[in-house]
Image 1 (cartoon, rainbow, N blue to C red):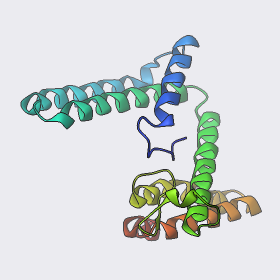
Image 2 (image 1 turned 180 degrees about the horizontal axis):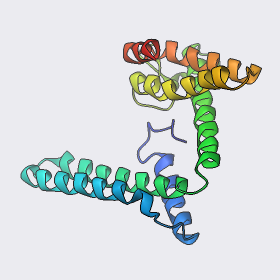
Image 3 (image 1 turned 90 degrees about the horizontal axis):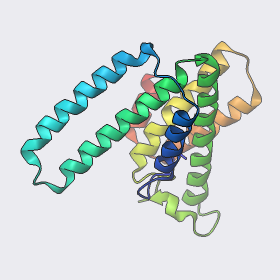
Image 4 (image 1 turned 120 degrees about the vertical axis):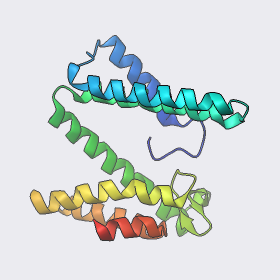
Length: 188
């Protein structure tokens, strides 16, 4: 659900609450390996809270601070999950990320070329956006899964499914018309 964020709160946020609750219910331990992460995130957010105290009159200040704390909490939840059986769990995360990138790209292509009525919502100003609010965000979202697939082709064996997936994601990168994403892919 990470590619579907143009509604607030996004489905990802609800799923993150469920994941956090499941971690508490399953008694996922707070491994000491992630304590530096917890300390640095606490320092970052405490510093942000102190700096926000000067601009509390602005409407967005508390929302940005709450978002910062929420993102820190999600980072800690994921760190706890990946602290054990790391490689297998990262492989699952990698597959899910590539799958969501393919879904996002397919929605973008369907909307961009107006192949199905009603899916033009996945474009903005003749640029693909998938479920994001901005085409540049879609472009950045697609970079990592594209390179994960390329890495698999170079390091592992060449699989037809990975080639097709990489081409599909590359089309999404092109249709986003994001110069920053194109430059990042070229640099990568």
